[in-house]
Length: 282
View 1 (cartoon, one colour):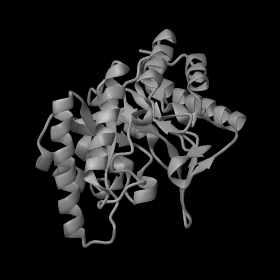
View 2 (cartoon, rainbow, N blue to C red):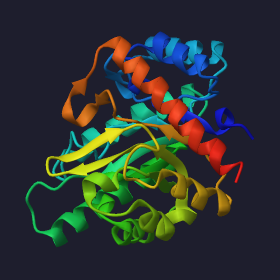
View 3 (cartoon, rainbow, N blue to C red):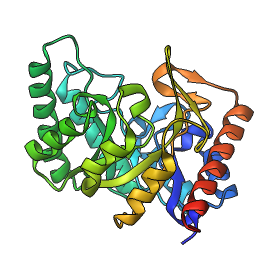
View 4 (spheres, rainbow, N blue to C red):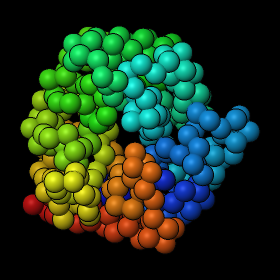
């Protein structure tokens, strides 16, 4: 299987507008696109007509959308964010996923608002349980990413979340590069949670005193190739989605110009292709 059959990417890492996002993915030969925002709006914020237009453009391009990335539980929230608001975001995101022919929604598990760790854990677990039960009703699956929030702190917290919620409507996205910011090694984390991973994000970078600095796949300190090998040997059949953070970092409100954004994304795609082809020629 070629890399283009297993790779995709988060569209707004390549361009803000949907037409440009689609064009770059088609240029690269990718058959899928993960959607987070279109012209700065989350898919849950689009009205029915706009959402239908997005779905038509994606279908006309011959692309599929494996995952809709929601802001539920992410850096823009805290564990105190109104849960009814989050349930409304979930409903809108589920509508978007269904319109696009999919049912997977990326979520996180809520940054703390200053409460003690035990209280943070209890409220994060409660929220994800409520959201997952609603996801079951809406016919979608939540994929928790090892990023912002209580359960993203390490594999033990992630496993506790899965055990607590105990539902097939909650599985995982594993981002190979997020350990740069959160202080763990990707391969070790992955080894503990791999049976629950349905989707993978690809990024690479370096730890610095000022925080994580991202670079092309294969050029940083993350063992991207080792993680991909680990997944493939375990029989992982899902996609590898580019989230390079080279020219677009949403949680820092940092975005380059259109040309730099597109070129950085293309370079990251080719970097992942090199990793993929090396692994599958070993």
